Length: 291
Image (cartoon, rainbow, N blue to C red; front, side, top):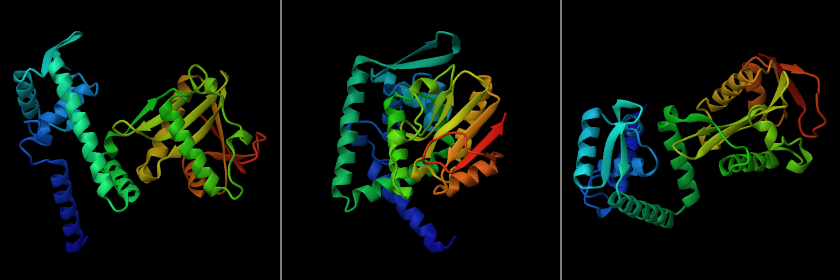
């Protein structure tokens, strides 16, 4: 790394610090600094256990206690012992806290809109933001089971189909593909997994089963901004773990030679190429793995 590279990183850090108001004593003009506002936001967004909030925000216990105490003194937050473990605490917003949370949400949304409106290339800026946020937060990306018919799953699948349409020489029509039924992607037959990055999904994979000893891996996709972070391997390993839980002993999948990174991944993970096992018009490579 050169001195010029370091200077660029530091310039970026200064710009972000100024844009988000990290040094403001009154974040978004609401009378408290960013740290307190972030705690309030975390509680309002559904995080209740104080230890979870502290981990999510990367705060030490002393600072977390001070921020909570200040919010309690303002009448915005109430804390109580966890009903199952008195050593843990649960935080909740009061009515005044709910109003303050909504005010912050409106102001933050307005600031985001204003930033994009003044950007000469808003789409490019959003893509760059995605890459930075995912690179910095890669350790916080989680794998969760989700409803294959839910909005998050549908968003991932729509992006996946759009990418296939651009990468396959003859395009892609999901109606011609062996698209799995949603019922085959939920327990006890199968599962649908999402890679989630602080809310939005950035990847998916389906485990298509029919209740027997064999199942298929379907619809593995990673958001372009999250590629290179090892998420495809994580999703595949988790799909295999779920398959074992469901009693599956053999997994199969298919792919297309227009997706060389997929071929490389499967071979690296120990999948063995086999003969065609379906009549889907799109795949030209077929793999199997014994669990």
